[in-house]
Amino acid sequence: MLLDHPDIAEAAVIGIADERWGEVGRAFIVVKSGRVLDPTALASHCAAHIARYKVPKQFLLIEELPRTASGKIQKHVLRAWTAPDGQRV
Image 1 (cartoon, rainbow, N blue to C red):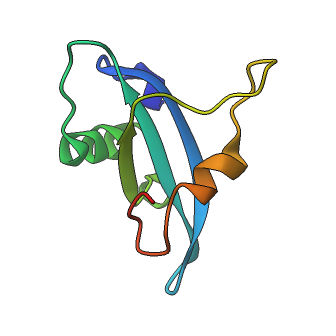
Image 2 (image 1 turned 180 degrees about the vertical axis):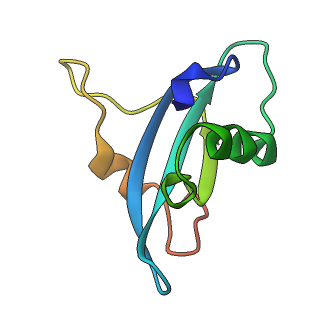
């Protein structure tokens, strides 16, 4: 669903702890070259296509997704890139 957006090249979502819901999504987005992406508009795009509880609560724009030699996304690296307040470290 995130990849259906015309400005997104790649995306990955991980679960993060949330006091109210237990766990919510944090999306890591790689924007296509030459495009600009507004995270607020992206949340609206998601809400129009999936159930509200499935919409990631945070969208972080990154240059590229970390991958293994075989091309798999390293989600443990994405978890290590973020501090508890959602800021990239």
